[in-house]
Length: 126
Length: 126
DNA sequence: AATTTTTTTAGAATTATTCTAACTTTAACT
DNA sequence: AGTTAAAGTTAGAATAATTCTAAAAAAATT
Picture 1: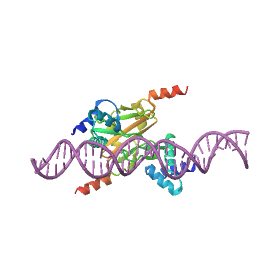
Picture 2: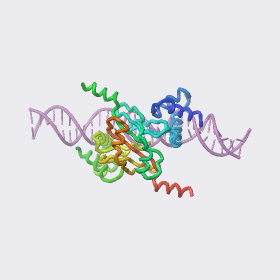
Picture 3: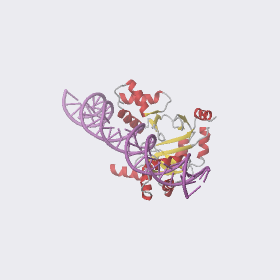
Picture 4: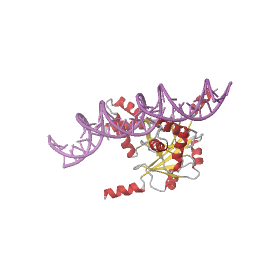
């Protein structure tokens, strides 16, 4: 575990945010000004392969990364891009049964308009 | 419905493949040599907004598109990128209950190594 | 300590996608 | 039918995210 990898991992674990690679790079630079973007990407890929973190694909925008402690899905606002976690009890088993073969990882994404954004939209059309 | 949009939609519906925008562009050019990449993207976005097609985000690689007739998930080989559909009975309801708010669309992706690729891997390490 | 392997760095290169501005088609109206 | 407006298309430039490259540094192994 290099110092660089530790920094990347710490950022992802530090809060409940789901950062993009670019955001992680910016945050990492605060602690380690010489870190390179390529190193951030290298480590994100490595940590993903080790299943320590998960990639949330960004629907056109940049991908985001989060902790892989417990399996969960993501509620994504199509307006502001914010991500929230949610859990379906027993989902891993439901999924395995439906797929019928060894699953390396999964991604479950529900696209919504979050309450802030839908209020804002309502307000602007009044 | 312009001729261009009809061509794009026909390609997506024509077979069970899940094409990338670039592949759709290449196929569309066969029928309509002057079609532009931007038109393909425009129409993919418009059809997606109308929920006639769905985008499958590409985990780093290019996004793919498919029919939105019936809700289903995707089994994606991490090696060759091939996509297969699968269904979980009653999933839409399970999901709505877990999320607890209006869902515009969802994406459910199971990452696997397909049988062809795992055989190939086994063969090459023998 | 010397050697080999792995990781990092900075910046160039690539890829997918979006933007732009001019042009064409379609629709709506008189 | 002719005119105007609106929507859609085109080609290519621009952008954004990510990957690649080659040299340097760090870590691991002998």
